[in-house]
Length: 145
Image 1 (cartoon, rainbow, N blue to C red):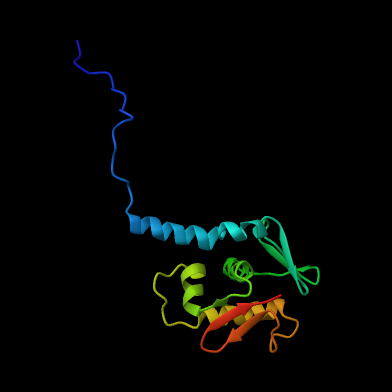
Image 2 (image 1 turned 45 degrees about the horizontal axis):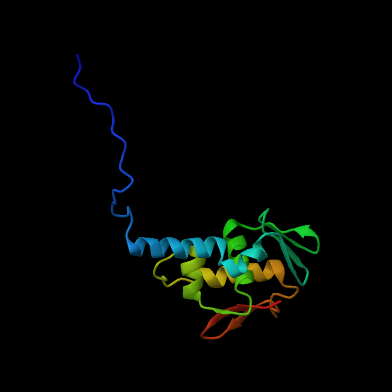
């Protein structure tokens, strides 16, 4: 005969510590917000947004300019989406590096500037005189329709 016991059901009254800390929860909240947007903006990502000659399809993660599909990297799409979700807001390089790139601390880099330049070439009628992604010296960038 074996002396093995049948497994006992766990008590629902037993309380355990959370598997992750409060600071890790805060990091997850930032990640979810930067990936999916806040509740107030979430409705904008359910379908399409248009501005100027550009139409963005969030569900398919594609955008079109003058009816033609724009070849874009995943990072370019995420940056454009972030600009659209934060339309009219001044976005610092540090904020973009944190929320789009996922850095906790912003490194010294020109990545944001280079991606903005690439986005302008893909969405602006005249990238040298942008109408949609504006540079605010010393502050960052602002998207306007």
